[in-house]
Length: 194
Image (spheres, rainbow, N blue to C red):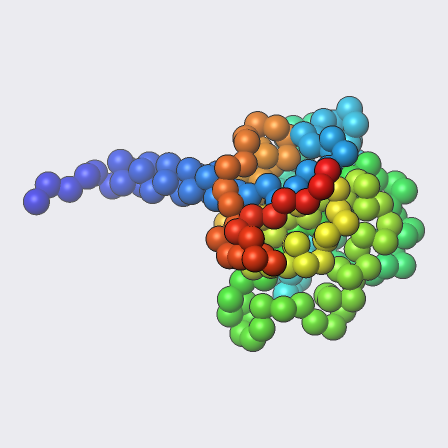
């Protein structure tokens, strides 16, 4: 049986990965004309990675770099307390929460707990009109914790192609066509008033 040369197989796999990430990306809602982002209006971005451990937060350097290449200035932090958020929020044009929770990473529940949960429950106390949340794992967390955010998306995974697709969607280079793969309050996608 003839087989494809390795380089062709790799190129095909990369194309499938990119297309899957782009087509899965789901716009949950966008209010107040916040999207697409423009450096003239949203130059300084505070990217807040909510991840189960510090090293996992480093993976979002890719998203920070993608936005940086488009003219934004991005500061990346892992978690932020309500007190720190209140202090830092005025210095940024946009608050971008990246919430990652995957099955078995770490072992245990997909829910947030302890400091993680407290920080996200308080996330939209400050700057909610300039807050965007992206779920890079469980499809439930962003709609649950960020109901008052100005915009929300689900990317379902933090693999590089999902982060690149998210950057494209935030900047208006890609139109999200994905839908929620699970029911949320009896719906398969979320429709909130704008």
